[in-house]
Amino acid sequence: MSCSLDFNLKEYGYHNFPRSLTKQDKQLLSSVFHEADDGNKGFLTREDVKMAVAEIFGYKPSKLETDQLILKFGEDIYGSRCMKLAKFMDAMSEKLMKSDEDQDIRHTFMAFDSQCRGFLTVEDFKKAVGHVAPHLPMHAVDLSFRELDRDGDGRVSYKDFEFMMKYNLAEHI
Image 1 (cartoon, rainbow, N blue to C red):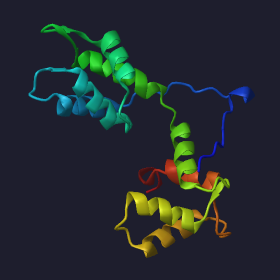
Image 2 (cartoon, rainbow, N blue to C red; image 1 turned 90 degrees about the vertical axis):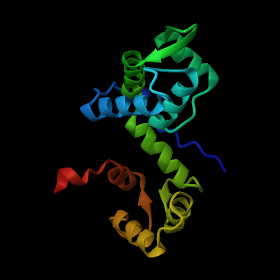
Image 3 (cartoon, rainbow, N blue to C red; image 1 turned 135 degrees about the vertical axis):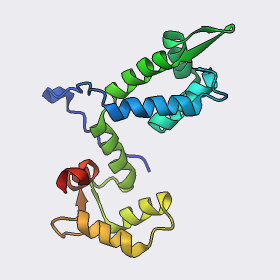
């Protein structure tokens, strides 16, 4: 079943503002580059770039997207277009800064909300967790759900889900 709970707020004046790149983001990009650089060549081939994008963003880019990245940020090395670290950092920084955390949270919520009701039940939660972490004990899932269900009505609203996704334990200790 597919549903579209379109949370498009642009008509109300909301726009995505690019976020700034953190030190951790830069370390991640560098680390992924070096992991994807098979053979320590000092550059990424087209296939290496696909692997790196999948590692960073969690999806396999299309041939078109990969070709556009290589065309825009790559350079000719040994007769083919490849991407060195500095250009890889530029390309991935651009993509990272455009990413919208709230959009990712909305998509995750919609994936959990298989019945398109606008809230999650404990059954929705168990089903989703069962797909991602099948060995997690169900009592732990129940406990987590009860913690998210702040008003105790047996439903986790989008606001409760968003709060959980944005909660940073380090900031609250």
